[in-house]
Image (tube, rainbow, N blue to C red; front, side, top):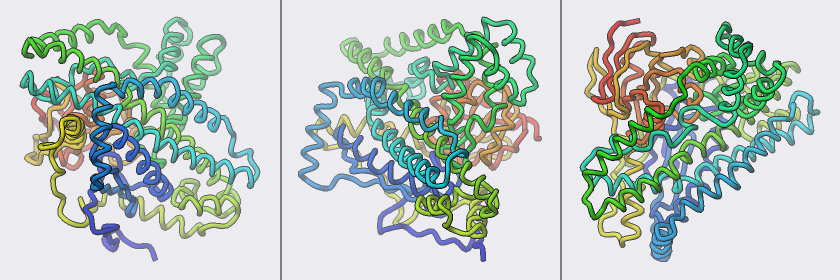
Amino acid sequence: MTQTPSELRFEAPDGDTWTRDTSHWPLPVPRLYGELFPLGIGVGFRDAMARYGLLIEGIDTVSIHGFGYNCVRQVSDPDEFGRRIEAAGRAFETKLWRHDVERWDNEAKPAAVRVHLELGAVAPEELDAEDLVAYLDRCMAHFQAMVQQHHVFNSCALVPLGDFLVHAREWTGADESELLALMEGHSTVSRGGSPEQGRLVAAIRGDAAARALLLNGTGDGAAVADLQAMPGEVGAAAEAYVRHVGNHLVGGLDIGSPTASEVPEVLERCLRMAVIEDDDSAPSAARVAARESALRASVPRDQQDQFDELLAEARTTYRVRDERGVYSDIWAGGVLRRAVLAAGRRLVAEGRLGAPEHLMETSPAELLAAAAGSGPSADELAKRHALRESLATFTPPPFLGPEPTPPPGPEGLPPPLFRAMSAMGTIMAGVFGTPVADSDDRIVRGLAASPGEYEGRARVLGDRLGLLDVEEGDVLVMVSTTESINPLVPLIGAIVTDSGGVVSHAAIVARESGIPAVVGCNDATARIPDGARVRVNGSTGEVEVLVLA
């Protein structure tokens, strides 16, 4: 008998506090993802914290009925405390993040891309049963390694930015949104861009036939395949583009989300926007330069050189924040999804599975067993899938175990640790934020994350397939966003989220794209009807519902 949401038990795995992670797991995830992801994040997070001398031992993540819960572990061993002091001092003295950015650019990212492409070039439907099992096993191992890689680079991506915010806030008195606006233009990936997209856009602009094909297309995605079939540079560029982005997850981090190749209509719309938009970056650069000059003028004269230095360091690592997701687990997750669905289609054809996507409800061991000819029954997997689908609108407990308490502050720590923990504490507060709950029937209130005002149709994405309905100029309304929505950014006029703060992903992509954003609204997805016309004011943190759907 299938359980109902109200019959499910949510219990802490141990006696500590476990807090629900709505920023990365806004929807219940398939069992396969829920068991693989925690294994990777635990190792990666611990490595990142130790490397930069942060007093966080690590973070444990668990999937409970598909919902993610985190438990942050603090360093308690006195000997380890001493090692962290040394590591923190060394990180700032040597600017360790510069080495890590170089390592990311020259080693980690290229190596990851090579494996992504190698695995993506395999046709799983052509493999025999034994080879398919081996392929699935390799895809799972690769995904887990990429989750680990994503989080190994946490400190590199976050500490320099947090360090800049801590100091610049004290010198200028400016709020974090003003300071973060100085990062605009330093993360192409956050605008949905890539070298492959840039090559294809340039080729289309230089070819009248290709431009007409794309701009006059029906919007159903057929134009993407037509571009691939064209001779010369357009066809070659389109083929490279699809090969690189086709297996990226879109709309969510988990393998329940479709890949870009599954939603070619979204790729077509985004390519069309990229081709027709003005690619002159001078206005943006001038705007950022003006902001920088104004803020720098408010810095005490004897601190201005340090302001310049910290700003430069933050900008150097800023793009790694989104790149580590796009080039790690978002791509590897899409490759894994593709492999599982191929195996699922084979089992459906053999009468052993109700639908290909049901195979994602297996554990890693069950997946391999199913591909080999055994594993859970079709009825059991169908029940698991139905339960997860029914939980899409269910709100689980915000925490499990004892009442959450604020993390310890950095006061009283030795100088290197104080600096490191102040930087990371500022970033964590900015990523997760404190939701604002004083909305009413017509005005939804949150945190002002990216300035400007915009009116448009609200597209409330309550599930992974809602992204198919996103059209040019829509206001994206979600519980939270991740790097997986970056391909949609060229279409969006503004962003509104229930959770997150001014350093959340939604805030970053909005500022990078020059569109308004209001985050941490708490109840935007519940209060704003899908299709309603809304006015988003990213300067005041208000979203007004103008006309109901």
